[in-house]
Image 1 (cartoon, one colour):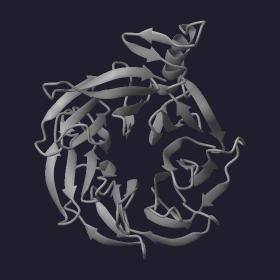
Image 2: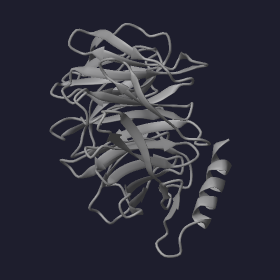
Image 3: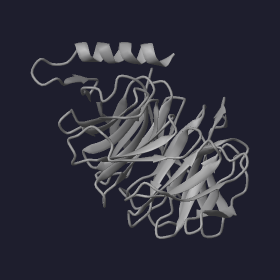
Image 4: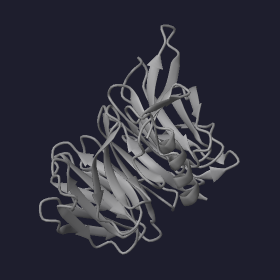
Amino acid sequence: MGKSHSKDRRARASSQKSSQDGIVTMSGSKQLPPAHSDAVTCLAPVRPGLCLTGSSDKTVVLYDWTQGAVKRRWSGHTREVTKVAYSAGLDAAFSASRDKTVLMWKLSNIETNPIRAFRGHTMVVMGITINPDNTQVCTGSRDNSLRMWDVETGACLMENSVPRNLVTDICWVSGQQTVAQTGEDKVLKLWDARGLYVSCTFPQKQYIQTSCDVSRDGNYCLTTSNGFGGQGCEATLWDVRVVKAVCEYRGHRETASACAFLPPVLSQPLVATASHDCTVRIWDQNTQDCLCVQTLPVSGPLTALAGFDDASLCCSSFNTGVHLFHLDVTPEQKVNLIRKAQF
């Protein structure tokens, strides 16, 4: 389904570029030069205007949507890139892959080779998260394990595995020595990063948990569920302090594949979800109301979300690259998700 269709669509978009600046406006959304030649599988925010992307084309890209340009393209993985992460303190990108490795890239380095490789997982790596002081990176894999690595040397400091714990995503809990982890065993776990052991588990969900994000204050974790026909497909808000579910956000018809706590643009906190049903939804975190829905026709499954402090939101897709939105609030406090660009 994906590769040939993805390339065909990008080829059509490329043929429509303006001869003046390589950018064409389509339905109020700018068509920018594409970041990748195949499915975009993952995203990470750098700062407003800049994001990291990873792809089935095996490359990692630093993309500047204000200029419509690839600023860096890194090659080094031998299989699909599954996750990317950015460390502001190190000014470095990290990428995980189906080739079982994690690579580190320096944003200021014009060389395309990685500056560090983290090797040891025996199956595809599905999660990366960096500790607050930028000295360690934690990774999670379908080999049932989490590993903690020294950023400076690339050495594995700790490893622990849990039976049937096929990792789908991990995220550092702000202000704590704790890593949140989702997996195919349908359980959200918290790991103590000091000894890399499971410190607590949350009630099991009915469906596989596909992704997770943690609020800036470290009090809440958001996870998404796979599913079909509206069964499952929800996002769940968890209170990390009391280890229980707070509420669910329901409305997607297919697997909910990505979630994000959004920077504050209203008096109430907002969360975003993306799904294989080709929709992005914005929710009121407290009331569970769906405030707006944006549908991306022919995008194929949506794969990742990245929110920015200027109210920008990026969403990656299997067939149509990365979509850039702006979260707008009317004087009547109605939330709109406005399409700005595609790359």
